[in-house]
Image (cartoon, rainbow, N blue to C red; front, side, top):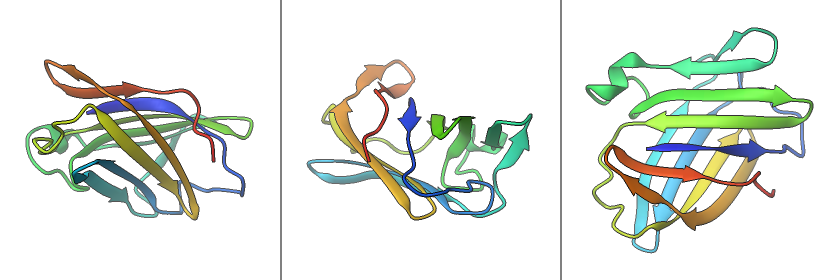
Length: 129
């Protein structure tokens, strides 16, 4: 599963020291849920924070199948990219809801995902809060 988009926090967030989570659901219930713990993400340069787990592709990894989470800070707006490997067999309906959390800020969007040869993919406009 891959998704990308943007979020605009309404309060100060610190993805290096706060929980970063993702929840994907459809009309049938939860499809996928995973969280990064404080300290899992690390700075790359001056504006990018990343989490990478190369073991997620071949197993459950260390954080529920999250392989890559990247947040790029653009003056108050975070561009995010998420890649995860997990059992998405319950993803039988293309319309799914994504909730993305950084600390106490939770962002949500609903959209039609595209099925690819490697799973599901969503590209969305910046999250409203």
